[in-house]
Length: 85
Image (cartoon, rainbow, N blue to C red; front, top):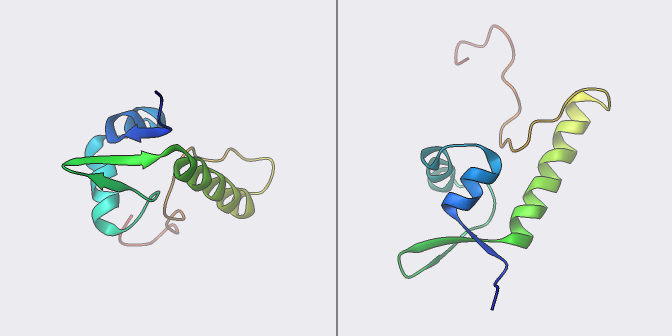
């Protein structure tokens, strides 16, 4: 039986990010909704797809139609001259 869930490794591979980044996002309350089953973190496929859709809408609104939208981003880009860049 196939359950529509992803492990954290599967999601990190899908988005081409490190496990460390994904774990930091969880600690910071960012990224898609996640669930813990015993000691294992799982992401429902529907939650991941919804997060990707919302991220794409957010970046399309900021960048416009002609520019490339990042795959998965939780923060808007920092302004140039920002000391935290």
